Image (cartoon, rainbow, N blue to C red; front, side):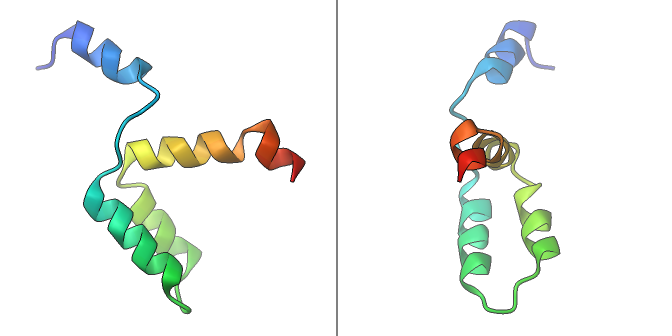
Amino acid sequence: MMPEELLQKIRNTDNLPSLPLVAIEVLRLSRADDVSFEELVEVIQKDPALTGKILRTVNSSLFIAL
């Protein structure tokens, strides 16, 4: 079991690294012509850090303004 202090630090960080294998797979899928949205979702949801980064981006005012 993780100490509460460590869990709190993890929850409050803005810069969690993405898992290398997940990032590589997302890049590979994004280059494929026949990839489905479901395939991307399946891979992305395995990485909480990447999921958080995507959500922050799409919810940002800059992204909404485009």
